Length: 400
Ligand SMILES: *Cc1c(COP(=O)(O)O)cnc(C)c1O
Image (cartoon, rainbow, N blue to C red):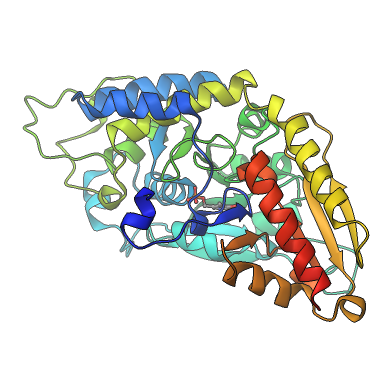
């Protein structure tokens, strides 16, 4: 009996990829070995985060970095650092920001459930711009001048959610924010690969960038990265770490926290509830090294072959299969199965539901159900569960 069955929980076939609700990405053996070894030894966490900062800074070509409990927690810590800097009194007050600037300007079309993480620090979001193209009402999207027009005495910074199609371009937003001495916090949680984004997003001059550690990097699911300006990473990590020490004894590495900027030791900060363990930090660093070295690239071709086998098994059937491949040699391809509801007798939503409720449960990606499509993400597929998945999908398409 497997470890989950021992506790009465049934494992699934995950064809959805590194999604949080299904436990994220598979950790490579090398990462798991590092996790185990790190768990057996004690180290001061501020020294470990200082070492992590160097590794992250090198990987992202930034000044400093920290390992957070996921990208969402990196966003809360980043917002907290922008709100307070090294001011002990302000750190202590978060998430209440009465009497000091707490507004983050964000393009209305970049709002999402994840910005709760920024608001959790105490930030208030001020929306600008319209996506008139999506509204079928015009030809324009949010524009850089609209950020500037929203800046005022209560503005603390800018929130930007990065994607290849984000608009206005990050460079333009950074330029206008920096003209007003305002920092830009970037959510790039799921924007790896391509590996080049590790460097290119911060290279725009963005002040802080958040990435997930448990998506394509394949670190522990509960890790993330915040990287950027050293004078912001310091206050961010000071609001994350356990602060129960004497000022005389507390000796954080100067590369991580500038103690000269602090009048005392902060109390436990807004991030104390997002603590990251030593073994998680080590595992994330090892995973980051694997990711940056291109160690996962060889899986792209294998994944493509597996998706090809599923397509063969589904032929002939009343679906149209196509393999979506970014062709960058780093991103895993996706299999798109367009269901002809009239011919199959049931739609994509019902098939998705039946796959989840079957034995073993199969979770295909639900991202395109509205368009009548099932998506197969191969991240968790091996030769054996690929066969099971193909057979079950074939049955669902036949039994309509
Ligand atoms: C996944 C994601 C997050 C959250 O990342 P975690 O590492 O799970 O905390 C935040 N923002 C966006 C855009 C994401 O895709």
